[in-house]
Image 1 (spheres, rainbow, N blue to C red):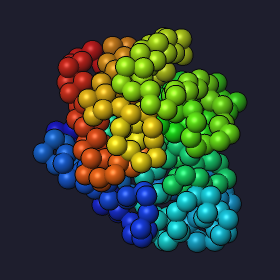
Image 2: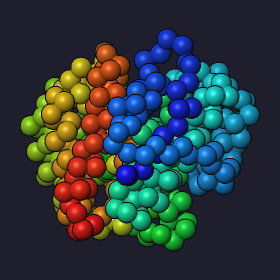
Image 3: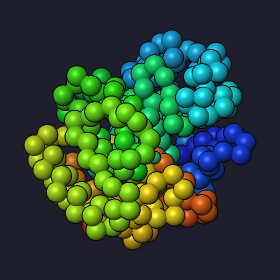
Image 4: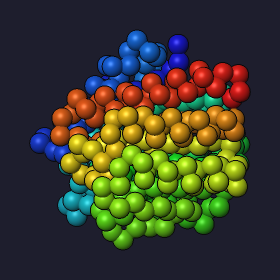
Length: 300
Ligand SMILES: [Zn+2]
C-alpha cells in the first residue's frame, strides 16, 4: 500500500471562515482504503528556516504576530494553527523523500504557496513546497527541481522564495484577474482568463508543461494541485469541471512519469460551496496520482 502523509491536526477550529480546514481530513477519510496514512511529526526549526526568516518562524511559533500580519495571513493565530502549518511542512518533506525513493509522494494537505520568507498571506503561513524542495537540495538528493503550480491563484510566495535560484524552476498557471495583485514573477507564469474552462486550461497546459520539463530536466517535481480551479469554487473562476480537474492531474503525472521524474503531490486551495465537493476533488487528485503511477509501472 502506498503511503499518504496526513495529520488529523490539520483540522483547526478557525471559526466561520472560507478556508475549511476539515477538507483534508475529509479527503483522507475517502482515501482510507487506498493507502496507508502516515502522520508527520513536527519539523525542526532548521527545516522551517530553509525557506523562512528566523524572526517569522519564531514569532509564528511564539504567538507574537502583529494584527496586521494576521490580517495579511487571513487566518486567526492560535497555537493549534501554528502547529498545523508547521506539521504540513513535514508532510511535504516526507512526500518529497517518498517521491525520490519510489517515484510518487502523496501529501493529503500542504500547498501553501502564498507563504513568503518573512510573512504569510492568503491562508498560508509556512511554504511547505519550498521547504520540501530545499530540504531535498540540502540533503543532496537533487540538484534541479520544479514546482508545477496549477492552483487558481498564482504561487507568489514560492516564486519569491526561489527568486535568484535558477536550479528551481517555478511554473504557475492561474487566473489572471484575481488575488494576488501584483503577482511576484516566477520562472514561468501563464495567466488564463476568467471562465476559461476545461479545453482552454488543458490546451494551455499541454503547450507549456512538456516543453519546460524537457528544458529544465528537474529531478523532482512538487505539484500544487489546487482544487479551486473547479466550476463551483467561490474564489476561483476558471470553471473546470470535475472531469477537467481529473484530466489536468492526469496530464501532470503522465508528462512527469514519461520522463521518469518523481512527483510529490500537495493539495493547495479549494473552496467549493459544498465542502464535500472540495474533499472529493482532493481525494480524486490523490487517486489519479496512484492510477497514473501504476500505469507507468516500472518506467519510473
Ligand atoms: Zn488558491
